[in-house]
Length: 275
DNA sequence: CCGTAACCCTGCGTGC
DNA sequence: TGCACGCAGGGTTACG
Image (cartoon, rainbow, N blue to C red):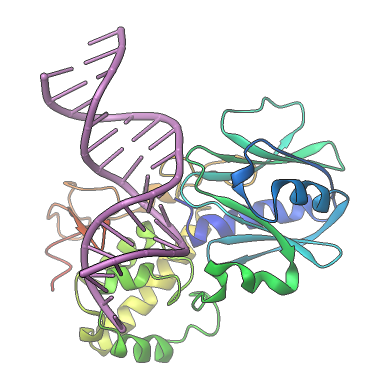
């Protein structure tokens, strides 16, 4: 479940080793993974392009190419973008292989095939529907406490689904939403507009804390996630509530509960996180 | 505006 | 042992 910290870790692990290399050739084993343009167009367009750097927007990985193009990758649930020697075994579910000018490859692997690749002009990233209306970067300077507070006042939804809304804040997924709400001691079903100033401050700080901690620990490897070099992260060991149903809350020893909220399973401490 | 659910997909756990 | 089934989950889309 790659969220902002995992995507950022992939970006940071790959950028120094692939910048400056040329994508010599692409092999597409599953054409639906290429969302834009067609698989054929992708293959012909990407060949010969030099990698100039990388970016991240929300959960999207952006690989910038010389000539004004960008390769954009969304890993969704089980996607992996890994740098491997061309001699390394091609594992099951390898859908796209980019051959690089140093004999290495960038491989897109995705067990559930939910992830997508896009190749489009760097000036047209807004053409990707998920990016067009994407909300603020939670670790960027536009995400201020004042902005967060003001926005929450007008929202009539529950706080947990709101944190997952990518058009509100970019990059938070189920793991970090549950962790942030636990740190802030806020029940996931509280209505967003009901949070008082102290709640807002705690949640604002908690969002940034859990994301920064996730990055510092190189991501949460709950199941499939690995960085650009195929290495697992360490943040799964730091989680307080996510995936810990029926385990004691680290604060108060009350057993963690799990409940579907807004269609997503939510993990919380019924004692620390009151209504 | 908000909530709910379907969709996409494979692997895994459960029950028979 | 193996089959059928349900669940998991991010983000988009459809619908009430």
